[in-house]
Image (cartoon, rainbow, N blue to C red; front, top):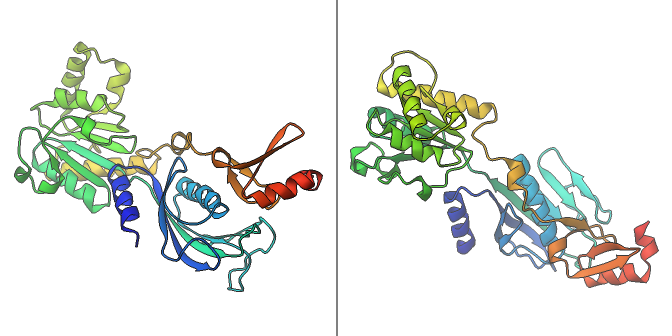
Length: 332
């Protein structure tokens, strides 16, 4: 286990940043990657840690980013066929995809080694930020944590010990101290104490959902007040009030079930999730080495040739030399 890499993974998880944990689970010499080597790969393609050499790393990055897109782990096999029962393709630069999450990519560069790398994506789960101090607040946070989502309680008028889950409590209403994204639901349950302040703080964020636990009459009054403070129709349309499923008059703790049930339904419809397209805007541009077929990241490519006004990129100097000696063979 690489303690530094694991610490970085924990930090990214706390910051709600998507990443992939890559671990070398098998290798055959002379591969530069070692069994037990680990790295985290971010959504922009940057790597923290060590996995392997110049031919392997770009391919691992591209496959890791694919894991972020579909959210499923993958076992990546790099290298020529080694006789293990993997049904690997032995053709240069070819790939073999299996329904069980195994992906084989034959490497035919200067290295004779092979590796198997387990890629495990970590995507931000929905986060519920519930503001206030009441049995409903604690119940919403408890149910949120019970279903595996992130929960935060904000109560700027109390202390952590005033709540059933003190480890989840923050005492500042400054939401800028949190990572609030499209996968975040902000639920205001202050019971009239400072609904307006809490809602204005929520509207200043990118939260994918903003809800107000209140009666229909109080919700309407709050909308009227927010209009006097300069908030328009687009702002008010972001507020779901009353929050949760309409179950009529129910006890405070049952309000939690109504709120979370509504959020789960929205999640199933595709809300409360990170937009994969926006996360992929900064991803590296890739090219294919025309000689060996391996993936090359254009920004990091050290070996490049121009033929007939077109750029070609290579994973190693040997591939570049072969191309420049007989370009027509590889261009075709």
